[in-house]
Image 1 (cartoon, rainbow, N blue to C red):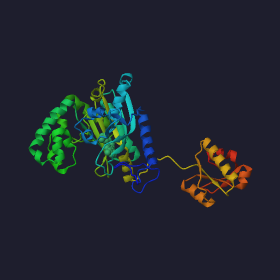
Image 2 (cartoon, rainbow, N blue to C red; image 1 turned 45 degrees about the vertical axis):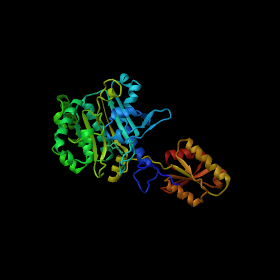
Image 3 (spheres, protein in one colour; image 1 turned 180 degrees about the vertical axis):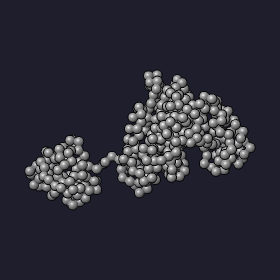
Image 4 (spheres, rainbow, N blue to C red; image 1 turned 90 degrees about the vertical axis):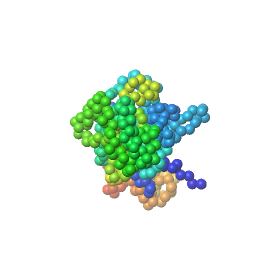
Length: 430
Ligand code: AMP
């Protein structure tokens, strides 16, 4: 029996695989670090929530008629008869946690970030998986359009500072009232051509009309091309807020385009919505997205607290970097020193093992070979892992308590007391 990862789930490996060379843990961590540093500079604090949440939380927040809730959730009944769901997104769990721990009361303006795994039973393809990771932020307690600008600017500068050029699409979906009026107008417009709409489009017409706009079907797009825009149905307040956001974005020189077709896959959005699209990524070009969800906290049983946030797709980000040939700034995983033993004497091996642990205790990345390879092959292994220095111990050195320290790039070599080699490695000079 040969087991494989579940469909459309993947392994992140320490070495580039033939199939997905862009998916390595070093790249993954580089992106996480980049994100963490950026949001922490902007005053965001980390929240981590469980993988599982009560199913009801997602039904209520994301909405029963959405694709995610109606057909994509990994839901099961636990041994205590509770219906639990593996989180398909990070916002509702963050809201649940903040209500549960009274954070909204204690911190009237709350800025959070998270890095978490999401699970959706999607039709998989490149860039679309059943388990994916999102890097996200949420801000609670402010309706000011300047905070919308902050969140959008963060998402954009995340990509631009990585060297990924992308486009910011924005729209406003207004208040519940605006959407109710718009839904009617949109349905009235589409109704005469309903029979010509794709099956998916017809289904959306019935259960979630706004989602008709979120289609890639050319026929549907043609029918919808002349549809009224949601923007024309915005209340004065929503329009003003949207205009202010645009003014702030212009002031901080973030280019954007207004996209009347932009409605997102969750019911909880109100006001600003946005999406960041990358280039050269094919159909899965959405790198991240988000928006405002001013009613969500109340919907989840909390007070009336405004909120907004975004989620960036880790895999999409790695794919974008790969497409552009950009390697993120990865940590050096090579050891500083690799110990090589000459001969088969036990004293030599013991001296090597002792030195290895004293170096590691001194905080120096050090390694050695355990496969009993000959002298030459130990050097090869040291080269493979990219060591900076070789430490060579033979019978003479073991007897005297010394080692030969050799700089791999310059080839320079000197004898050191085993005791003092850590110091030499720390300064990096022979
Ligand atoms: P969403 O939570 O649907 O708003 O998605 C936010 C971002 O997460 C998207 O823009 C994508 O970059 C990424 N994303 C969403 N779903 C998937 C998926 N199934 N596989 C990979 N990335 C995804």
